[in-house]
Structures are given as structure tokens and as C-alpha cells.
Length: 101
Image (tube, rainbow, N blue to C red):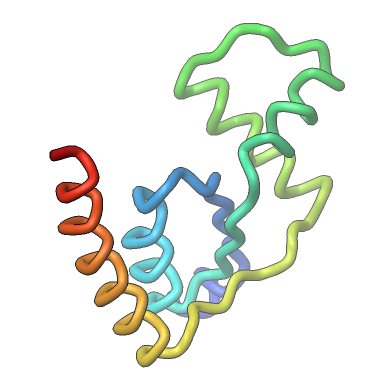
């Protein structure tokens, strides 16, 4: 079964922090993961003459994009980098609150 999973290439659009958890999960499951700029897929869709946007069509478009463009595989940053990033995001929250006051 694991050999079958090695042939799967999952492509996610970078959507703020929303793609990160699933990317880490898929990577931990030994799947091939790419994270791409949503503008790439939008341009690709335009090149195919696609205008309508639905989840089902988006998933098919991402699959087609992955097959044709073969985006580079994503490797997660080291644990230390993730930890520092989480600390910085916690620091940003009170600073933003203070600026709003």
C-alpha cells in the first residue's frame, strides 16, 4: 500500500495558514506535496478558457496543473523554524491589538 502512495502528488494552493496543517500531515504520510501560488492556477485556468469556479472544478484543475506543470516538491522547514515562526505570530497579535487601541 505504501508503494501506491509514493506515486501520489498532492498540490495545495498557498492560502495563508490554512494549507499548512494539511501539508504537514500529507508530508508525514510520505506523500509528494507541492504548495503553489494560487495565481499560477488562476493563470493556468485562464489559459484553458475556464471562467467558472467551483470546488469540484478547482480540484480537477489543480490535478491537471500538477500533471502538466509538475511543480517542485515541498519540504517542510525544520522544527526549530516552525517553533520560531509560532513565537513570532504570538508576538504579532498583542502588537496589532496595541495599534488598534
